[in-house]
Image 1 (cartoon, helix red, strand yellow):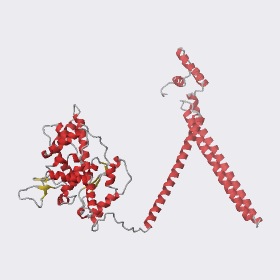
Image 2 (image 1 turned 120 degrees about the vertical axis):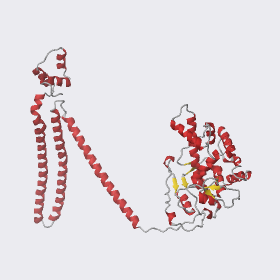
Image 3 (image 1 turned 30 degrees about the vertical axis):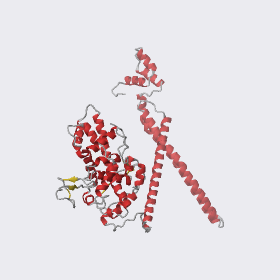
Image 4 (image 1 turned 120 degrees about the horizontal axis):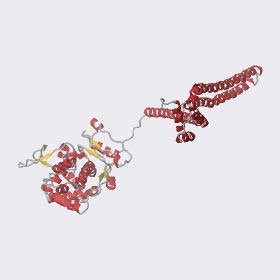
Length: 507
Protein backbone atom coordinates (compact mmCIF):
# COMPACT_ATOMS: atom_id res chain seq x y z
CA UNK A 1 0.00 0.00 0.00
CA UNK A 2 1.38 3.37 -0.99
CA UNK A 3 2.23 5.80 1.81
CA UNK A 4 0.89 8.90 0.05
CA UNK A 5 -2.74 7.67 0.09
CA UNK A 6 -5.33 9.33 2.27
CA UNK A 7 -6.76 7.49 5.24
CA UNK A 8 -10.05 6.81 3.41
CA UNK A 9 -8.23 5.53 0.35
CA UNK A 10 -6.23 3.19 2.60
CA UNK A 11 -9.45 1.79 3.98
CA UNK A 12 -10.84 1.26 0.48
CA UNK A 13 -7.63 -0.45 -0.56
CA UNK A 14 -7.84 -2.76 2.47
CA UNK A 15 -11.39 -3.63 1.44
CA UNK A 16 -10.14 -4.45 -2.04
CA UNK A 17 -7.20 -6.54 -0.70
CA UNK A 18 -9.46 -8.56 1.61
CA UNK A 19 -12.18 -8.69 -1.03
CA UNK A 20 -14.96 -7.28 1.17
CA UNK A 21 -17.97 -7.77 -1.09
CA UNK A 22 -20.16 -5.35 0.87
CA UNK A 23 -17.85 -2.40 0.19
CA UNK A 24 -17.33 -3.45 -3.42
CA UNK A 25 -21.09 -3.59 -4.01
CA UNK A 26 -21.49 -0.05 -2.67
CA UNK A 27 -18.74 1.14 -4.98
CA UNK A 28 -20.32 -0.59 -8.00
CA UNK A 29 -23.64 1.12 -7.25
CA UNK A 30 -21.68 4.38 -7.05
CA UNK A 31 -22.69 5.06 -3.46
CA UNK A 32 -20.27 7.02 -1.35
CA UNK A 33 -19.46 5.57 2.03
CA UNK A 34 -18.16 7.63 4.89
CA UNK A 35 -14.91 6.80 6.58
CA UNK A 36 -16.77 5.67 9.69
CA UNK A 37 -18.96 3.32 7.63
CA UNK A 38 -15.97 1.76 5.93
CA UNK A 39 -14.26 1.26 9.31
CA UNK A 40 -17.36 -0.40 10.67
CA UNK A 41 -17.60 -2.82 7.73
CA UNK A 42 -13.89 -3.68 7.97
CA UNK A 43 -14.07 -4.33 11.73
CA UNK A 44 -17.12 -6.50 11.14
CA UNK A 45 -15.06 -8.61 8.72
CA UNK A 46 -12.06 -8.82 11.14
CA UNK A 47 -9.83 -6.69 8.96
CA UNK A 48 -7.06 -4.82 10.87
CA UNK A 49 -7.49 -1.05 10.61
CA UNK A 50 -4.35 1.17 10.51
CA UNK A 51 -5.27 3.42 13.42
CA UNK A 52 -6.04 0.36 15.60
CA UNK A 53 -2.69 -1.41 15.14
CA UNK A 54 -0.67 1.79 15.28
CA UNK A 55 -1.76 2.23 18.88
CA UNK A 56 -1.05 -1.34 19.94
CA UNK A 57 2.08 -1.93 17.85
CA UNK A 58 4.52 -1.55 20.73
CA UNK A 59 2.35 -3.61 23.03
CA UNK A 60 1.87 -6.48 20.59
CA UNK A 61 5.31 -6.54 19.01
CA UNK A 62 7.60 -5.91 21.97
CA UNK A 63 5.88 -5.83 25.33
CA UNK A 64 3.76 -8.98 25.09
CA UNK A 65 6.51 -11.23 23.61
CA UNK A 66 9.04 -10.13 26.24
CA UNK A 67 6.49 -10.69 28.99
CA UNK A 68 5.71 -14.19 27.74
CA UNK A 69 9.38 -15.00 27.40
CA UNK A 70 10.01 -13.77 30.94
CA UNK A 71 7.31 -16.05 32.30
CA UNK A 72 8.81 -18.97 30.45
CA UNK A 73 12.27 -18.25 31.77
CA UNK A 74 10.89 -17.80 35.29
CA UNK A 75 9.17 -21.19 35.07
CA UNK A 76 12.38 -22.70 33.79
CA UNK A 77 14.34 -21.17 36.67
CA UNK A 78 11.81 -22.35 39.23
CA UNK A 79 11.79 -25.90 37.84
CA UNK A 80 15.58 -26.08 37.77
CA UNK A 81 16.01 -24.51 41.21
CA UNK A 82 13.37 -26.83 42.72
CA UNK A 83 15.15 -29.84 41.26
CA UNK A 84 18.54 -28.72 42.55
CA UNK A 85 17.12 -27.81 45.99
CA UNK A 86 15.45 -31.16 46.39
CA UNK A 87 18.67 -32.86 45.41
CA UNK A 88 20.73 -31.04 48.06
CA UNK A 89 18.08 -31.61 50.76
CA UNK A 90 18.10 -35.32 50.07
CA UNK A 91 21.87 -35.37 49.99
CA UNK A 92 21.98 -33.58 53.35
CA UNK A 93 19.63 -36.09 54.93
CA UNK A 94 21.68 -38.95 53.63
CA UNK A 95 24.85 -37.35 54.90
CA UNK A 96 23.23 -37.05 58.36
CA UNK A 97 22.24 -40.69 58.20
CA UNK A 98 25.85 -41.54 57.49
CA UNK A 99 26.85 -40.43 60.97
CA UNK A 100 23.89 -42.15 62.68
CA UNK A 101 24.18 -45.52 61.08
CA UNK A 102 27.75 -46.84 61.01
CA UNK A 103 26.96 -50.31 59.65
CA UNK A 104 24.90 -49.71 56.52
CA UNK A 105 24.90 -45.92 56.27
CA UNK A 106 27.75 -45.67 53.81
CA UNK A 107 26.16 -48.09 51.32
CA UNK A 108 22.74 -46.51 51.57
CA UNK A 109 24.24 -43.06 51.19
CA UNK A 110 25.96 -43.88 47.88
CA UNK A 111 22.92 -45.74 46.55
CA UNK A 112 20.67 -42.80 47.34
CA UNK A 113 23.26 -40.38 45.94
CA UNK A 114 23.25 -42.34 42.67
CA UNK A 115 19.45 -42.23 42.48
CA UNK A 116 19.36 -38.53 43.25
CA UNK A 117 21.99 -37.87 40.56
CA UNK A 118 19.79 -39.68 38.07
CA UNK A 119 16.72 -37.69 39.16
CA UNK A 120 18.70 -34.46 38.85
CA UNK A 121 19.82 -35.43 35.33
CA UNK A 122 16.24 -36.23 34.35
CA UNK A 123 15.10 -32.94 35.78
CA UNK A 124 17.69 -31.06 33.73
CA UNK A 125 16.73 -33.00 30.60
CA UNK A 126 13.08 -32.23 31.22
CA UNK A 127 13.88 -28.53 31.16
CA UNK A 128 15.24 -28.75 27.59
CA UNK A 129 11.77 -29.06 25.97
CA UNK A 130 10.60 -26.12 28.08
CA UNK A 131 13.56 -24.05 26.91
CA UNK A 132 12.85 -24.94 23.30
CA UNK A 133 9.11 -24.24 23.78
CA UNK A 134 9.80 -20.87 25.44
CA UNK A 135 12.22 -19.73 22.74
CA UNK A 136 9.99 -20.88 19.89
CA UNK A 137 6.93 -19.32 21.50
CA UNK A 138 8.77 -16.03 21.94
CA UNK A 139 9.94 -15.95 18.31
CA UNK A 140 6.53 -17.03 17.06
CA UNK A 141 4.63 -14.42 19.04
CA UNK A 142 7.08 -11.71 18.05
CA UNK A 143 6.73 -12.58 14.37
CA UNK A 144 2.96 -12.86 14.56
CA UNK A 145 2.51 -9.55 16.32
CA UNK A 146 5.05 -7.78 14.12
CA UNK A 147 3.71 -8.97 10.77
CA UNK A 148 0.12 -8.48 11.89
CA UNK A 149 0.93 -4.83 12.55
CA UNK A 150 1.74 -4.16 8.92
CA UNK A 151 -1.97 -4.27 7.99
CA UNK A 152 -1.44 -6.72 5.12
CA UNK A 153 -2.98 -9.82 6.62
CA UNK A 154 -3.44 -11.40 10.03
CA UNK A 155 -0.92 -14.23 10.38
CA UNK A 156 -2.29 -17.31 12.06
CA UNK A 157 -0.41 -18.00 15.24
CA UNK A 158 -0.80 -21.76 15.11
CA UNK A 159 0.73 -21.97 11.61
CA UNK A 160 3.58 -19.72 12.65
CA UNK A 161 4.22 -21.85 15.72
CA UNK A 162 4.38 -24.95 13.54
CA UNK A 163 6.71 -23.17 11.12
CA UNK A 164 9.06 -22.04 13.89
CA UNK A 165 9.06 -25.43 15.55
CA UNK A 166 9.69 -27.15 12.22
CA UNK A 167 12.57 -24.79 11.53
CA UNK A 168 14.03 -25.49 14.95
CA UNK A 169 13.76 -29.25 14.42
CA UNK A 170 15.54 -28.98 11.06
CA UNK A 171 18.35 -26.92 12.59
CA UNK A 172 18.67 -29.38 15.48
CA UNK A 173 18.80 -32.42 13.16
CA UNK A 174 21.38 -30.73 10.89
CA UNK A 175 23.55 -29.90 13.88
CA UNK A 176 23.41 -33.50 15.12
CA UNK A 177 24.27 -34.73 11.61
CA UNK A 178 27.25 -32.39 11.30
CA UNK A 179 28.59 -33.45 14.69
CA UNK A 180 28.13 -37.14 13.82
CA UNK A 181 29.94 -36.94 10.46
CA UNK A 182 32.72 -34.81 11.94
CA UNK A 183 33.34 -37.37 14.66
CA UNK A 184 33.19 -40.18 12.09
CA UNK A 185 35.75 -38.51 9.81
CA UNK A 186 38.07 -37.85 12.74
CA UNK A 187 37.73 -41.46 13.83
CA UNK A 188 38.43 -42.79 10.34
CA UNK A 189 41.38 -40.41 9.95
CA UNK A 190 42.89 -41.58 13.21
CA UNK A 191 42.46 -45.22 12.18
CA UNK A 192 44.07 -44.45 8.82
CA UNK A 193 47.05 -42.77 10.44
CA UNK A 194 47.42 -45.65 12.89
CA UNK A 195 47.21 -48.25 10.10
CA UNK A 196 49.80 -46.40 8.01
CA UNK A 197 52.06 -46.11 11.04
CA UNK A 198 51.70 -49.83 11.71
CA UNK A 199 52.55 -50.62 8.10
CA UNK A 200 55.63 -48.42 8.33
CA UNK A 201 56.75 -50.10 11.53
CA UNK A 202 56.38 -53.58 10.11
CA UNK A 203 59.59 -54.98 8.63
CA UNK A 204 59.30 -55.52 4.89
CA UNK A 205 59.30 -59.12 3.86
CA UNK A 206 61.93 -60.03 1.35
CA UNK A 207 60.23 -62.11 -1.31
CA UNK A 208 62.19 -64.48 -3.40
CA UNK A 209 62.28 -63.58 -7.06
CA UNK A 210 60.26 -65.93 -9.17
CA UNK A 211 62.00 -67.32 -12.20
CA UNK A 212 60.21 -66.32 -15.40
CA UNK A 213 59.01 -68.98 -17.74
CA UNK A 214 61.33 -67.61 -20.40
CA UNK A 215 64.62 -66.79 -18.80
CA UNK A 216 66.43 -63.81 -20.25
CA UNK A 217 70.16 -63.53 -19.67
CA UNK A 218 70.59 -59.84 -18.91
CA UNK A 219 72.83 -57.60 -16.83
CA UNK A 220 71.34 -55.78 -13.88
CA UNK A 221 69.11 -52.78 -14.57
CA UNK A 222 70.94 -49.48 -14.36
CA UNK A 223 69.76 -46.43 -12.46
CA UNK A 224 68.27 -44.72 -15.51
CA UNK A 225 66.07 -47.77 -16.10
CA UNK A 226 64.66 -47.49 -12.61
CA UNK A 227 63.31 -44.08 -13.51
CA UNK A 228 60.75 -45.73 -15.77
CA UNK A 229 57.82 -46.29 -13.45
CA UNK A 230 55.84 -49.44 -14.01
CA UNK A 231 52.10 -48.72 -14.14
CA UNK A 232 50.14 -50.59 -11.52
CA UNK A 233 47.72 -53.19 -12.87
CA UNK A 234 44.23 -51.79 -12.91
CA UNK A 235 40.75 -53.17 -13.23
CA UNK A 236 39.23 -53.34 -16.68
CA UNK A 237 37.84 -49.96 -17.65
CA UNK A 238 35.49 -48.80 -20.34
CA UNK A 239 37.15 -47.85 -23.65
CA UNK A 240 36.70 -44.13 -23.01
CA UNK A 241 38.58 -44.37 -19.70
CA UNK A 242 41.74 -46.09 -21.01
CA UNK A 243 44.53 -43.58 -21.55
CA UNK A 244 47.58 -43.85 -23.76
CA UNK A 245 50.94 -44.85 -22.29
CA UNK A 246 53.96 -43.42 -24.09
CA UNK A 247 57.24 -44.89 -22.94
CA UNK A 248 60.07 -42.32 -22.75
CA UNK A 249 63.31 -42.54 -24.69
CA UNK A 250 65.52 -43.82 -21.86
CA UNK A 251 67.28 -46.75 -23.54
CA UNK A 252 65.25 -49.19 -21.49
CA UNK A 253 66.28 -52.79 -21.27
CA UNK A 254 64.35 -55.85 -22.40
CA UNK A 255 63.97 -57.01 -18.82
CA UNK A 256 62.14 -53.78 -17.98
CA UNK A 257 59.90 -54.14 -21.02
CA UNK A 258 58.95 -57.70 -20.10
CA UNK A 259 58.16 -56.63 -16.53
CA UNK A 260 55.98 -53.82 -17.86
CA UNK A 261 54.01 -56.20 -20.08
CA UNK A 262 53.46 -58.47 -17.09
CA UNK A 263 52.30 -55.59 -14.88
CA UNK A 264 49.70 -54.34 -17.38
CA UNK A 265 48.55 -57.87 -18.33
CA UNK A 266 49.62 -57.45 -21.94
CA UNK A 267 49.25 -60.95 -23.41
CA UNK A 268 49.04 -61.76 -27.14
CA UNK A 269 46.69 -64.69 -26.55
CA UNK A 270 44.19 -62.31 -24.98
CA UNK A 271 44.66 -59.84 -27.83
CA UNK A 272 44.00 -62.54 -30.44
CA UNK A 273 40.80 -63.56 -28.64
CA UNK A 274 39.39 -60.16 -27.62
CA UNK A 275 40.67 -58.23 -30.67
CA UNK A 276 41.73 -55.39 -28.37
CA UNK A 277 45.20 -54.03 -27.65
CA UNK A 278 46.23 -51.45 -25.07
CA UNK A 279 47.61 -48.11 -26.35
CA UNK A 280 51.21 -48.60 -25.19
CA UNK A 281 53.58 -46.69 -27.48
CA UNK A 282 57.31 -47.31 -27.25
CA UNK A 283 59.57 -44.63 -28.72
CA UNK A 284 62.33 -47.15 -29.47
CA UNK A 285 63.26 -50.81 -29.24
CA UNK A 286 65.25 -52.15 -26.28
CA UNK A 287 68.91 -52.11 -27.21
CA UNK A 288 69.44 -55.64 -25.94
CA UNK A 289 66.41 -57.25 -27.62
CA UNK A 290 68.70 -59.55 -29.58
CA UNK A 291 70.05 -61.05 -26.36
CA UNK A 292 66.79 -62.93 -25.78
CA UNK A 293 67.71 -66.53 -26.49
CA UNK A 294 64.13 -67.74 -26.82
CA UNK A 295 63.06 -67.00 -30.41
CA UNK A 296 59.34 -67.16 -29.65
CA UNK A 297 59.67 -64.71 -26.74
CA UNK A 298 61.73 -62.36 -28.92
CA UNK A 299 59.09 -62.35 -31.65
CA UNK A 300 56.22 -61.85 -29.19
CA UNK A 301 58.06 -58.90 -27.61
CA UNK A 302 58.56 -57.35 -31.04
CA UNK A 303 54.89 -57.78 -31.97
CA UNK A 304 53.74 -56.30 -28.65
CA UNK A 305 55.81 -53.17 -29.32
CA UNK A 306 54.85 -52.66 -32.99
CA UNK A 307 51.17 -53.75 -32.93
CA UNK A 308 49.74 -50.73 -31.03
CA UNK A 309 51.65 -48.36 -33.32
CA UNK A 310 50.22 -49.95 -36.48
CA UNK A 311 46.66 -50.09 -35.11
CA UNK A 312 46.82 -46.46 -33.97
CA UNK A 313 47.83 -45.25 -37.46
CA UNK A 314 45.08 -47.33 -39.06
CA UNK A 315 42.55 -45.76 -36.68
CA UNK A 316 43.66 -42.30 -37.79
CA UNK A 317 43.27 -43.22 -41.45
CA UNK A 318 39.77 -44.64 -40.87
CA UNK A 319 38.73 -41.47 -39.05
CA UNK A 320 39.96 -39.38 -41.99
CA UNK A 321 38.19 -41.67 -44.46
CA UNK A 322 34.88 -41.32 -42.62
CA UNK A 323 35.29 -37.55 -42.55
CA UNK A 324 36.13 -37.49 -46.28
CA UNK A 325 33.00 -39.46 -47.09
CA UNK A 326 30.87 -37.05 -45.06
CA UNK A 327 32.37 -33.96 -46.69
CA UNK A 328 32.13 -35.43 -50.20
CA UNK A 329 28.41 -36.06 -49.73
CA UNK A 330 27.71 -32.40 -48.90
CA UNK A 331 26.70 -29.87 -51.53
CA UNK A 332 28.24 -26.96 -49.62
CA UNK A 333 31.44 -27.15 -47.60
CA UNK A 334 32.78 -24.76 -44.99
CA UNK A 335 36.13 -23.00 -45.16
CA UNK A 336 37.44 -25.30 -42.46
CA UNK A 337 36.42 -28.39 -44.45
CA UNK A 338 38.00 -26.99 -47.59
CA UNK A 339 41.24 -26.35 -45.73
CA UNK A 340 41.20 -29.93 -44.41
CA UNK A 341 40.66 -31.28 -47.93
CA UNK A 342 43.59 -29.29 -49.30
CA UNK A 343 45.78 -30.64 -46.50
CA UNK A 344 44.84 -34.25 -47.23
CA UNK A 345 45.29 -33.80 -50.99
CA UNK A 346 48.86 -32.67 -50.34
CA UNK A 347 49.49 -35.44 -47.79
CA UNK A 348 48.39 -38.19 -50.21
CA UNK A 349 50.00 -36.43 -53.22
CA UNK A 350 46.78 -36.25 -55.21
CA UNK A 351 46.72 -33.86 -58.16
CA UNK A 352 43.88 -31.82 -59.64
CA UNK A 353 41.83 -32.13 -56.42
CA UNK A 354 40.70 -35.60 -57.45
CA UNK A 355 38.47 -36.69 -54.54
CA UNK A 356 37.95 -40.16 -56.03
CA UNK A 357 41.71 -40.76 -56.13
CA UNK A 358 42.07 -39.40 -52.59
CA UNK A 359 39.41 -41.82 -51.40
CA UNK A 360 41.28 -44.67 -53.10
CA UNK A 361 44.62 -43.79 -51.49
CA UNK A 362 43.23 -42.96 -48.05
CA UNK A 363 42.84 -46.45 -46.58
CA UNK A 364 44.41 -48.78 -44.04
CA UNK A 365 47.43 -51.05 -44.44
CA UNK A 366 46.54 -54.61 -43.32
CA UNK A 367 48.00 -55.21 -39.86
CA UNK A 368 49.46 -58.58 -40.87
CA UNK A 369 51.39 -57.04 -43.79
CA UNK A 370 52.70 -54.18 -41.64
CA UNK A 371 53.90 -56.60 -38.93
CA UNK A 372 55.45 -58.98 -41.47
CA UNK A 373 57.31 -56.19 -43.31
CA UNK A 374 58.47 -54.66 -40.01
CA UNK A 375 59.80 -58.05 -38.88
CA UNK A 376 61.53 -58.69 -42.24
CA UNK A 377 63.11 -55.24 -42.63
CA UNK A 378 64.22 -54.79 -38.99
CA UNK A 379 65.23 -58.36 -38.15
CA UNK A 380 62.45 -58.51 -35.54
CA UNK A 381 63.64 -55.22 -34.04
CA UNK A 382 67.34 -56.12 -33.77
CA UNK A 383 68.87 -54.51 -36.89
CA UNK A 384 71.28 -51.60 -36.66
CA UNK A 385 68.85 -49.35 -38.54
CA UNK A 386 66.02 -50.15 -36.10
CA UNK A 387 68.14 -49.64 -32.98
CA UNK A 388 70.04 -46.53 -34.11
CA UNK A 389 67.41 -44.77 -36.22
CA UNK A 390 64.02 -46.33 -35.35
CA UNK A 391 63.83 -47.45 -38.99
CA UNK A 392 61.40 -50.37 -38.85
CA UNK A 393 60.61 -50.70 -42.57
CA UNK A 394 64.01 -49.99 -44.13
CA UNK A 395 62.88 -47.04 -46.25
CA UNK A 396 65.51 -45.51 -48.51
CA UNK A 397 66.39 -41.85 -48.90
CA UNK A 398 68.71 -39.95 -51.24
CA UNK A 399 68.24 -36.46 -49.83
CA UNK A 400 67.22 -36.77 -46.20
CA UNK A 401 69.24 -37.67 -43.16
CA UNK A 402 69.79 -41.39 -42.86
CA UNK A 403 72.04 -44.23 -41.80
CA UNK A 404 74.74 -45.40 -44.18
CA UNK A 405 74.42 -49.12 -45.06
CA UNK A 406 77.61 -51.11 -44.39
CA UNK A 407 77.42 -53.36 -47.46
CA UNK A 408 76.33 -50.69 -49.94
CA UNK A 409 77.61 -50.98 -53.52
CA UNK A 410 79.79 -48.32 -55.10
CA UNK A 411 77.03 -47.10 -57.40
CA UNK A 412 74.42 -46.96 -54.65
CA UNK A 413 73.96 -43.56 -53.05
CA UNK A 414 70.96 -44.26 -50.86
CA UNK A 415 70.71 -44.25 -47.07
CA UNK A 416 68.21 -45.76 -44.65
CA UNK A 417 65.81 -43.08 -43.48
CA UNK A 418 66.18 -42.21 -39.79
CA UNK A 419 63.22 -41.36 -37.51
CA UNK A 420 63.02 -39.73 -34.04
CA UNK A 421 60.53 -42.30 -32.72
CA UNK A 422 59.05 -45.61 -33.84
CA UNK A 423 55.61 -44.18 -34.55
CA UNK A 424 57.06 -41.74 -37.09
CA UNK A 425 58.52 -44.68 -38.97
CA UNK A 426 55.10 -46.40 -39.07
CA UNK A 427 53.43 -43.24 -40.36
CA UNK A 428 56.04 -42.76 -43.11
CA UNK A 429 55.66 -46.41 -44.15
CA UNK A 430 51.90 -46.06 -44.56
CA UNK A 431 52.26 -42.83 -46.51
CA UNK A 432 54.76 -44.59 -48.74
CA UNK A 433 52.39 -47.45 -49.62
CA UNK A 434 49.47 -45.04 -50.08
CA UNK A 435 51.25 -42.52 -52.32
CA UNK A 436 54.24 -44.03 -54.20
CA UNK A 437 53.57 -44.95 -57.81
CA UNK A 438 55.36 -48.28 -57.33
CA UNK A 439 52.48 -49.52 -55.15
CA UNK A 440 49.56 -48.44 -57.35
CA UNK A 441 48.69 -52.12 -57.92
CA UNK A 442 48.46 -52.58 -54.16
CA UNK A 443 46.03 -49.63 -53.88
CA UNK A 444 43.91 -50.72 -56.84
CA UNK A 445 43.43 -54.24 -55.49
CA UNK A 446 42.67 -52.91 -52.01
CA UNK A 447 40.10 -50.54 -53.51
CA UNK A 448 38.39 -53.34 -55.40
CA UNK A 449 38.15 -55.39 -52.19
CA UNK A 450 36.71 -52.40 -50.37
CA UNK A 451 34.25 -51.77 -53.20
CA UNK A 452 32.92 -55.33 -52.86
CA UNK A 453 32.42 -54.66 -49.11
CA UNK A 454 34.84 -57.43 -48.14
CA UNK A 455 37.38 -57.43 -45.33
CA UNK A 456 40.86 -56.27 -46.26
CA UNK A 457 43.32 -59.06 -45.44
CA UNK A 458 47.07 -59.10 -45.75
CA UNK A 459 47.38 -62.43 -47.55
CA UNK A 460 45.15 -61.06 -50.36
CA UNK A 461 47.56 -58.18 -51.00
CA UNK A 462 51.10 -59.53 -50.41
CA UNK A 463 51.58 -60.38 -54.10
CA UNK A 464 51.21 -56.67 -55.01
CA UNK A 465 54.30 -55.67 -53.00
CA UNK A 466 56.92 -57.30 -55.23
CA UNK A 467 58.43 -53.86 -55.97
CA UNK A 468 59.11 -53.14 -52.29
CA UNK A 469 62.41 -55.08 -52.44
CA UNK A 470 64.85 -55.95 -55.20
CA UNK A 471 64.15 -59.67 -54.79
CA UNK A 472 60.58 -59.20 -56.09
CA UNK A 473 58.51 -62.39 -55.97
CA UNK A 474 60.86 -63.98 -53.47
CA UNK A 475 60.24 -61.07 -51.11
CA UNK A 476 56.44 -61.46 -51.24
CA UNK A 477 56.79 -65.22 -50.62
CA UNK A 478 58.78 -64.44 -47.47
CA UNK A 479 56.05 -62.05 -46.29
CA UNK A 480 53.38 -64.73 -46.73
CA UNK A 481 55.52 -67.22 -44.85
CA UNK A 482 56.02 -64.80 -41.93
CA UNK A 483 52.28 -64.09 -41.75
CA UNK A 484 51.31 -67.77 -41.76
CA UNK A 485 54.04 -69.04 -39.40
CA UNK A 486 53.29 -66.38 -36.76
CA UNK A 487 49.48 -66.27 -37.23
CA UNK A 488 49.61 -62.54 -37.92
CA UNK A 489 46.20 -62.66 -39.63
CA UNK A 490 44.69 -62.90 -36.14
CA UNK A 491 45.52 -59.21 -35.66
CA UNK A 492 43.72 -57.88 -38.77
CA UNK A 493 40.65 -56.63 -36.87
CA UNK A 494 42.38 -55.66 -33.62
CA UNK A 495 41.50 -52.21 -32.27
CA UNK A 496 42.79 -50.03 -29.45
CA UNK A 497 41.01 -50.35 -26.12
CA UNK A 498 40.39 -46.58 -26.04
CA UNK A 499 38.90 -46.36 -29.54
CA UNK A 500 35.33 -46.60 -30.72
CA UNK A 501 34.41 -49.63 -32.80
CA UNK A 502 34.09 -48.48 -36.41
CA UNK A 503 31.79 -50.17 -38.89
CA UNK A 504 33.16 -51.30 -42.23
CA UNK A 505 33.29 -48.41 -44.65
CA UNK A 506 31.08 -48.90 -47.67
CA UNK A 507 31.80 -47.12 -50.95
